Image: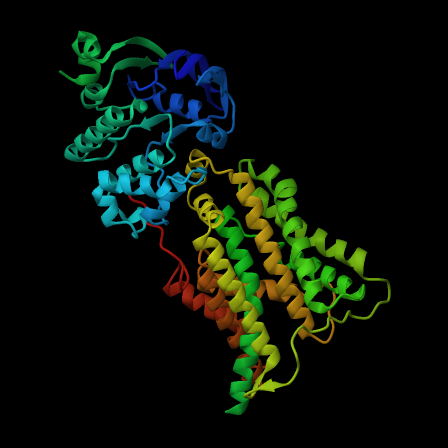
Length: 236
Length: 295
């Protein structure tokens, strides 16, 4: 069985149904990218997985157990780290505190060595260790949000538009780091991204979301070659 | 000059109480984003619990400790049973209305439980010795020491423990706190419990300073504490302390010198005038943070 499996997922906000019979799997160590236009339900899909959506129907399986409708903190503790859109850093806490909060539910003794590791991978964060997170640039905050999510030692990382509002060069760096982490740790990732070519470059598979369901999916290389996908999401 | 110094010391003693209640207000404001109008009456009820324990023969210090324990639990229970059910509703005003209702209900409940018909004002023994030390009343020194101790413990809790980090995370960004696995509900209960415990200390001490107390004990104090917290900046514990002390001293000095310049009875107005001026110049208070959103 896959690490993460969405089966017939539905749900939305208030009376509005955003997701409709959505099926998706992410295997151990796999990077899957969700492409789709604004309003297709990409963010809602991630929120449904991590327990931030009020109303969810269908099934979410993680590591062979059902986590549908569990509380967000329980899902996080089970090993799903969600980097939300807009980064969700704790703006008035320091960089160091933000990272420690990421590991707050861990009971093992590896927190300090993990801190050292992510500071090494993101040297800008090490320089700004004692600075309030909210005072950093968007790119730095995105790195911080990713590092914080990694501090939990998750089994899977959910990333919502990591490139949003970032300069192209920074976006490129963010995806390079994500690719490295996936290779080194074999960490599974489910990435929602507008910048399709950068995301597909580090992905194993991609799928296209339209009005709340998956309409196409396949290996990343195949999607990159697909004429309709290229026209709609890659822009060439 | 001696009179002036006496009044300043007197004001610092009063201000220490405003600061304690202000700290309680700030803790709840920081963790839940709302003003707890019932903070004073919660402290009043705790004060009666302290008094009841002394009436049972307990010493004043163990009685205050017992009352703090009771208040921490009661504060957490109030959050869970009265605040949370309305908080998920759509308007933040709902919670404000609930705290206003609690203001009246807790006061009435204290009256019902603790005051027998025809009873004189109750007496609270003081935990501090009488007399002076280098010209400063020991009562004032005691009040300030308690405040310093409260601040130190609160600082250690918030800055040096995992629990404190979780509390600050919930205050800073509740959704993200849930995403890292923090049980935000438990943290809100802890916040309310802490605030109620601080209120218990402040109420018991202020009652011990007065010749007698009844159910109106905390009403003026709540207003001055709100004033102090607003002056210092509602999101800053340090601001609540400094603001509370400033309001206390301003009140005492006005009380002393107001009548001399033909403005007797104006002491209620002065702290509020002070706040108006400060907030005109610094809308976030003396120590409040300006929220800068970067996108």
